[in-house]
Image (cartoon, rainbow, N blue to C red; front, top):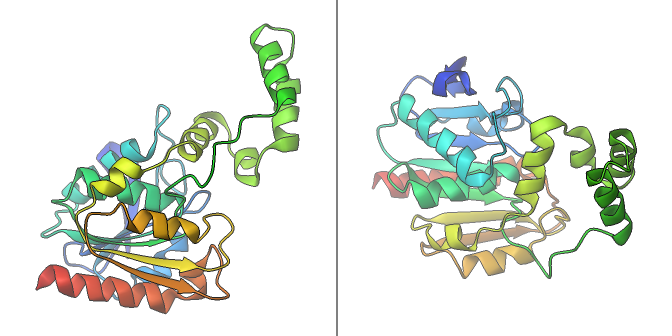
Length: 250
């Protein structure tokens, strides 16, 4: 396995195998390529550190799923893909994968998605009145940077607390994105592999997403599995990826 630089140093990715990539593996938020390498063995594949994680530097500006997908399309082109690849993606990586498949059907032949917050379930929650008051005070110069940060640290998610700089802004953008339009633009086959006990991306997302995808879908909802189903049942994701690769090649 070899770690290489792509997109003028914006992305570092590990190449598994020696042939042009047939698969792309995308990790979730706060992780890096090592979270997906156990799935990639046995494929000729690319396993990148998404920008801002692992060896890849943060984006220069606030980026969402579409911007990350544009980076991945450049990576695939530079890697010399000979045919559309299957993309196996977890959580945040799945946001990127759906945007990539919708924008570049010439590069993506199939998707295997697990634990991806693709759609918003229920109405969007507004920030609390207290936070809005503190934020307004900060904008007026009444509340210090330190006090605002203490408020965020006390009430933010674990991912939000651990992020800083542009990556915190990127997380905020990602959390507020929803992908109805991108899902409707996915023409390739999609395999949804989900944990029935996933609390970060509830399995109810799958039924809604299936109704939007234009291409054929398969669904596996695994009892007893949670958000990290790619680690709990890696054999199932590998099986679905191999099945889809056979369809691409046939």
